[in-house]
Image 1 (cartoon, rainbow, N blue to C red):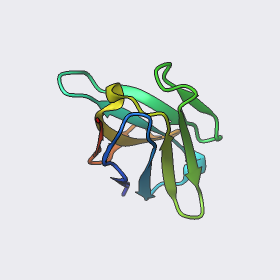
Image 2 (cartoon, one colour):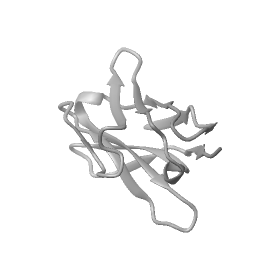
Image 3 (tube, rainbow, N blue to C red):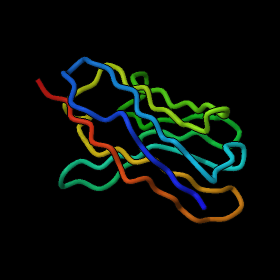
Image 4 (tube, rainbow, N blue to C red):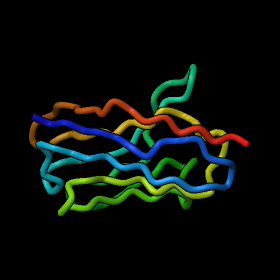
Length: 117
């Protein structure tokens, strides 16, 4: 059974940095596509970053060059390093996982990131 637990969200000033973590159980990284989505108040959930089962990464244009997605196979944990944060990055951030072989989406409970002075 897949379980995803996010952590690391908090309030930070503009220009600051945060690292989000997603502890994954029941997931084999080499068989799963994983990513981070976010949802701001009154807006649709949007894709932020993806890491494929083969380790390839891609980013939304709005975070390209500022955010970095990575994973640690030994710890079964995925990360999102967020630098140069802007107020528009304020949202609930969700961890996502989907097997390459079973098209079922799995979600974490979300972690709040607030960028404000």
